[in-house]
Image 1: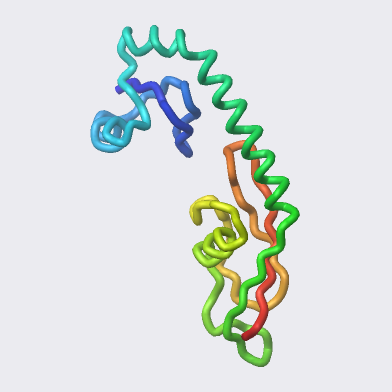
Image 2 (image 1 turned 135 degrees about the vertical axis):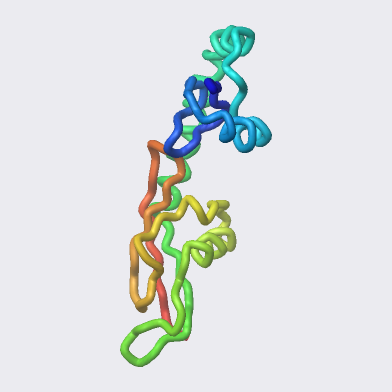
Length: 147
């Protein structure tokens, strides 16, 4: 089934693009969540008509993401956790912990946008990549200290 995407979807396409997906994926996921519309002749004409608005919205989202990325790059988040004598944590620091600390610092970043190879398990300063937009990402400094 051909659909027109209303939002950027990872591994599928960007806003305004026409993609071919499985019928079940379109009916059960994309259409009910208002992430896409069926690529009928009427919707294609509406897409052509609104393409300028879509381009402006994409540009605005990208500039907003760039501003957020520069602000995030200058911030250092400090988290405390229980640790042993050698600097190993008894637990780990996950993207959820970092997201909650960012909310406390005045940023709203979804935990799924914080990309870590593995959870942080040692005391010290770590760099975590935050993917704000498909084309914009920021390096966030996370300092883990012992309680």
